[in-house]
Amino acid sequence: MTNSKETIFDKILAGTIPCHRVYEDAEVLAFLDVNPISFGHTLVIPKQRAAFLHELSEESAAAIGRVLPRICRAVMQATGAKAYNVLQNNGASAHQAVFHVHFHVIPRLADSGLGIDWTPTVLAPEIAAELVEKIRASLAER
Ligand code: AMP
Image (cartoon, rainbow, N blue to C red; front, side, top):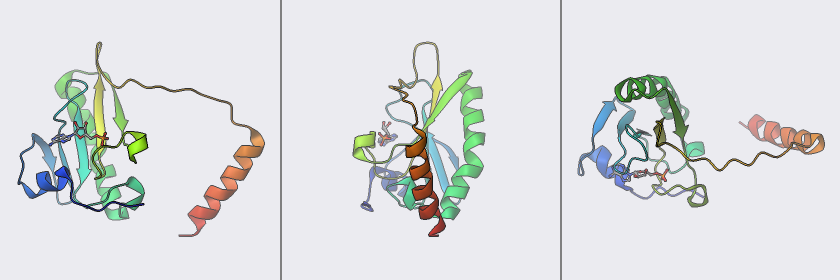
């Protein structure tokens, strides 16, 4: 399930390849995406090496949670965007290309931003009940 191999983000963290750094603390680094889909597209990553969000320690997750809103505010202020998306992909089939946890902060501007293919369905009550039971049981395991 996991892939803890070195990625290009480890090289950025180690300083062996450059990045356009906007923020750094003991547990988090943020830098501009090298192939932005909109002006100001920024990546926020934990220093902990983990491929997927569900593998992240609570400490790393908390460190990202603490700073993410502040980085979003700064990116909005710098770009003048009034709207944005935060995107976090897990798994190749979910569009993940770099297997080190990262959050995209993507300003929505008039002509650019995140395109979303969103096809809502209706949640059937019996399916909801079964799902809730399974998820709660899994959460209760730890
Ligand atoms: P994802 O599809 O969620 O894995 O996105 C990975 C992102 O990392 C893409 O938007 C890339 O443009 C970005 N990226 C890859 N290499 C670098 C790099 N060296 N510096 C900055 N961004 C990068």
